[in-house]
Amino acid sequence: MKLGARIFKTGVAIVLSLYLAQLLESPAPVLAGIAAIFAIQPTIYRSVLTIIEQIQGNLIGAGLAVLFVLLLGNHIIVIGLAAIMVIILNLKLKLENTIGLSLVTLISIMETPGSDFIPFAGFRFGTIMIGVFSAFIVNLVFLPPKYENKLYFKLSHTTEEIIKWIRLGTRYDYDHNQLKSDIEHLKDNLIKISQFYTMYKEERSYFKKNTLEKSRKLVIFRQMNSTAKRALDTLKRIHRFENELLQLPEDFQLSIQEQLDSIIYHHEQLMLKFIGKIPTHHLSLEPKLSLDYKELFTLFLTHQKGVSDLNDPHLYHTMQIISSIIDYGEQVEHLDTLITSFHSFHHNEITIEQEPVE
Image 1 (cartoon, rainbow, N blue to C red):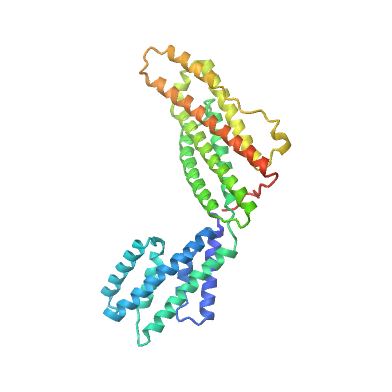
Image 2: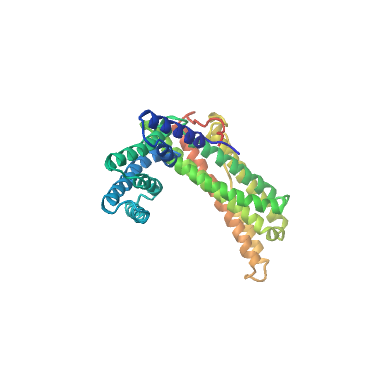
């Protein structure tokens, strides 16, 4: 099990919130700790949104708690009705993420009303807001996440795994059960990549130069993700239609293998090219990807003429493999164009550091 920054940030936020609540002599400092747990977010941008939403949600919880106690008392049925109203209002105002903490605020205020109920409610509300602000401070200054690193390394490792399996698949040298299991794992990785991409996109740049650079990186990372998806789609078709591949003429099989070898080699080079592992002055000397669509189509058409039944599923399955290879190759070509363009604007400005620990 790996301990990520968010786990440590949660602990620090709890400590800070409890310390501040005790320092301010809050009657229930534990509420600040609970609020801090709800308010921790993975990015600074989400922290800003969260603190705005939590203020609104907690005002709803505190306001309804005071209103219900003053009008109806604090019977357990009344607390239940108030909770329903809090949930409805939060949903109406599209504050779904604040429902949990709003209910904590509501119940903490309604549980023990006394003669000084209004000041009591104010203290409870203030204590909870201490936790929210503590979490915001921790999100702001403690271990700021570097989603660019996480995104690149997740993309790089996933791409490497897919390419490895494609290379083995075209040579029919792999364990079927292991590949089937790994395909599911690779699907999960692509979902995580999309999450990292969203979080990286939410990170804010404060200088125009960095904003322009990040905008271009976002386009490249999106294309890297699309290219990895096409590679995985090609791998799935190779695995699913292995029997169809084996029935193809030997020259057709060899052409497919050569074309895929060319694509995956270029794909590997592009992942290194982006972070400068291939020297910039060597970029123009690299051989361009030459996917011979004409050869593949010619071989496919020749193969089609030799099939007596045009409704034979074997023919359609072969066509799916060819179309997947062509689509994958085009995605790699587009990625090459984007990375080359990026390096023409930003020389040696890639800031990918060592692989992050999750």
